[in-house]
Image (tube, rainbow, N blue to C red):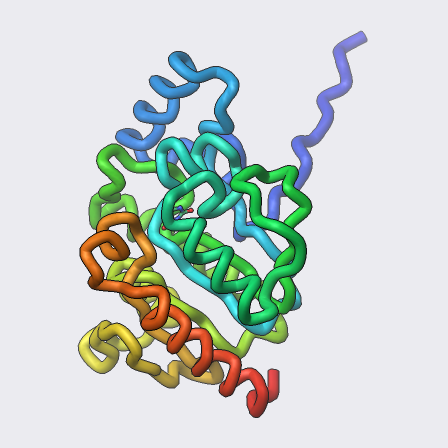
Length: 224
Ligand code: URA
């Protein structure tokens, strides 16, 4: 008797799945790291936090030894230290951030995703890789029924979000501290909380706090 073929479980369209084949360069990079570091996560990193959150934070892409190793956005990345500390301070997270996906940290009314789900070499996705991954961001946004505010961490996250919303990039130039109404959502721009930006003073913890202060003010009055 022929073996019964079991149907693969349906994957939500906001998730590329564990072995996404879409970007050949990223697939080759992932395969090389699966070989040399078999205990690392080494796969597209899923969003973290509840789907019914009102705030979505969009980063760039998993860091090689951070999210790509641990499997949770910004976790184990230098950038995660400032991000999670700020989220805890503003009540968007509960628990303790210990740079490990089993640290029990919980996001409250907040979700974190990346414009590109796979780790790119040198932390630099190509324009084509960014465009190829964009439908996953669009689906992530579409699957958040209460979403009212988005924080874009850096220029690429900003542009990817604007394009995913089918808004005109020229009408919404990136700028730290800028706020853009896009459809029913408000987009809050911030410089990325990367090691480079924080070490050079491009982004200070206080500048980062000011962005989240404005987000909090908006959430106090916004209706989903
Ligand atoms: N880690 C992520 O998950 N995203 C970034 O943008 C940077 C580090």
